[in-house]
Image (tube, rainbow, N blue to C red; front, side, top):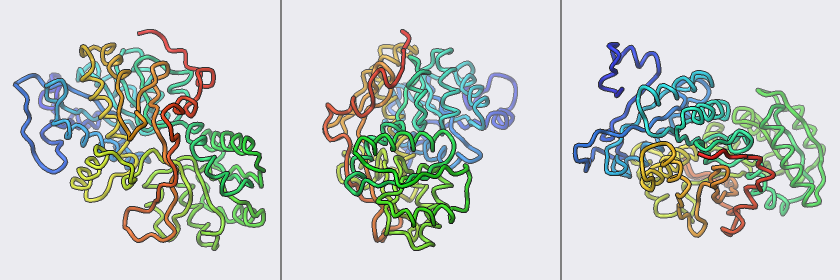
Length: 419
C-alpha cells in the first residue's frame, strides 16, 4: 500500500488517523528545493521509518527523521537506480511500535526499516525484525541487549552503549582529577552509568567522594548539591537523563557552583543543553558527533550545510544519527545483491564509511556500528546561538583500538544466529 492508494477501500485520511503515517515522496525530500529524479519509470522502492510523533520523544523523533530525509535527498532520492518513498509510522509505545513495524512490512512492502527513538521501542522492534526477516537499523538506542544477548541477524545499531561511552570519557576525566562524586538516577540508565564509570575510576586508581541515587524525575537537587559541595570532589559524574540533568544543571548554576567543579556525563544530546540556556550549560560529555568539529569529513560538512539550509539551524547529534543511519542503509543496499532481507543484511555488513582515518562499520558478529566517539566540553563563554561545545578528544585515536573500546565477544554476549 502506498500513500496514494491504500488498497483497503478506506480513505487515506482514515488510515493516517489509525497509524500516524506520513509517506514522503522522494521529490519532497530535498534539503533546499525540488530536484529532478533520474528514475527511469521504475516502481518506487519503499523504506520504512518508525519514530515518535507524540509524547516525550517527539522532538528526537522529528530530528532523526529530518536527518534521514537529508541522506536520501543527497542520494538524489533513489537507491539501486530506483526512486525511494519513505513511509513514516509512529511509535507511541513498544507494542504499537511492533504493530506499525509489522504494517510496514506486510502492507507497505518496505525493503528495510529505520526506527526507535529509545531503547524500549527499539528492543520491541528488533524482535519483530527477527521474526519477519526484515533489515532494521536503530539509530538512537543505547540498551546493551540490542546487540548483546538479544542480538539477531536482521538488527543493526548505530549509537554506542554506556560502557563504550564510559571508556571514551573516563581517561580524559582522570586527567582532571581522581576524586569523583556520582549522582545518578535510580533506574537502568543511571545505574549503568554508575557501574561503568566507577569501574573506570577504580582502574585509574581514583577514589569515590560520594554517591547519590536520585528518583527518576527529580526536580529539586538542592540537598544533593549541598552534599557535593561539602565533599569537594574533582569531578561530578551525573548519570541523569535529559530532564533530570537539565534541572540539576540549572540548580548547579543557581547555587554558584558552575565553573568550580566539572560536571561530566558519558552521553549528552544537543537539545538537552539547548533547552536549559547558555547561563546554566556546563560540563564535559561524550557525544557521537558535533556539527562544528574541525575534523568532520566533507560528507559531514555537506550534511551540516544541507540541514541548515532546510531547517535554519545546524543539525543536532540526533539529526546526525538519522542521517548516518540512512546513509549506511543506502550504502548497504547499493552493495546488496538483491532486495531480499538476507541480501541487504550482507550488504550492511560490508559497509565501510571513512571518518578521517577511522572507518566506521557494522561489526559482523553483533551488528554494532564501530566508530569513533568525541569528548566535548561546553565553552566557558558561549557567544554563538547554537555552537556551545569544543571537541577535546577523539576516542579511540587509532582504528586498531576500535574493537577494544567496543568490547569483546565475551563481554557483549551476542550469540548471532545464522541467516
